[in-house]
Amino acid sequence: MAEEKKVLGFETRQIHGGYHVDSTGSRGIAIYPTAAYHFRSCDHAAGLFELSQPGNIYTRLHNPTTAAYEERIASLYGAVGALAVASGMSAIFLTVSSLAEAGDNIVAAPFLYGGTYNQFRISLRKLGIEVRIAKGDSVEDFESLIDERTKMIYVESMGNPTCDVLDLEAIGALAKHCDVPFVVDNTFGAAGYLCNPFDWGANIVVDSATKWINGHGTAMGGIIVDGGNYDWGNGKFPQIDGPSEGYHGLNLYKTFGKQAFIVKCRVDGLRDFGCCPSSFDSYLMLIGLETLSLRVKHEVESCRRLAEYCRNHPKVAKVSYVGFEDHPGYKNAQKYYRFGASAVMNIELRGTLESTVKFVEALQLMGNMTMIGDSISVVTHPASTTHKQLSEADLKAAGVTPTLLRLSLGLEDVEDIIADFEQAFTHIG
Ligand SMILES: Cc1ncc(COP(=O)(O)O)c(C=O)c1O
Image (tube, rainbow, N blue to C red):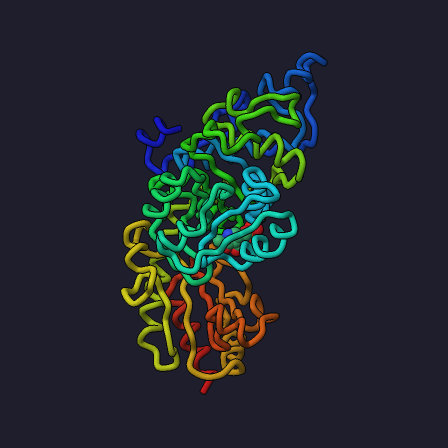
């Protein structure tokens, strides 16, 4: 893969990665809608089950369509392997549960997607895994929380929804210094096109493939990507470098070397938790990936254009766009993100909750949904959706005001989106 990365550009790998012409000559990658696979003999089956030979056993663990998708993702990241799962949330859970157990802790960034925050704060706590949220995004904020039971540092390469970007290289260096795996949610980084955390010290990447990878809002998915650059033989992870309970004492690190972590996520994680994708969804991801860079480039440019329009509009009180110098993430986004931005921004309207709702409902092109990375431009009103259950104090702490809107730009002509804004503004005073 690393060799391939050196030779071929991102745009080439997003089409050719994982594509091997089969015996039929088919241009399209085949969808294999199967649960099980015929074994050639009982010996063959035994070899597959004890992991002494590669091959398909059951779609919960392997599927040829999904394997092509995984190979394409690994190629895009220049990684040693990838595992496709049913959603971004399951990618995060499989990663954490492969590395941490009751009594361990993980140290996480203060800016996280709400679903991740809940998984960490509520569900992991019930499993006995402590999540220590850093007070700020400085190296010291993270360092002060790390101890000998810390099993990972966890951050988002761009926080959802605030678009904050922390100093990935500095946090990566801290993780290396403390000998702790550095895990980065790179959903906003568009499979490495906008941001590749492996260039900055990440050991593992997780993504919600539901967003830019699929790109059309047609399937849920998540991926785990293994950089193959963490020393699992350092004595901290006996579940990887030690006798495996589930595989007759097999040592995954000694057997699979650099791929030990991603193999563990598959053979223990997928086997035991079962959050596998369907072959059809993997096919949709493969199709989405073929146009990833083109879509993202257009969407980022449209977002910049809409941000400029909003900045000059009298009915907009505030524009929070990471491509503008007044955004706290601006400097790091310039360093870590191609184009220094993503396709997501936040605005606050002048007025009230009621007038904001009126504005949202007057929009004709933007979908009123909770989604990002779709080919349809999307507006989300957190106060009446994602943050509806929060108290006034919690809303304030989360920075969610009644007039806040999150915008994710799609593939439409941005002049039409601006015209849509213009007509919707006429509905509010
Ligand atoms: C940054 C981030 N991580 C993880 C997730 C969860 O992904 P999924 O919805 O595919 O489970 C999301 C969803 O929006 C997200 O924005």
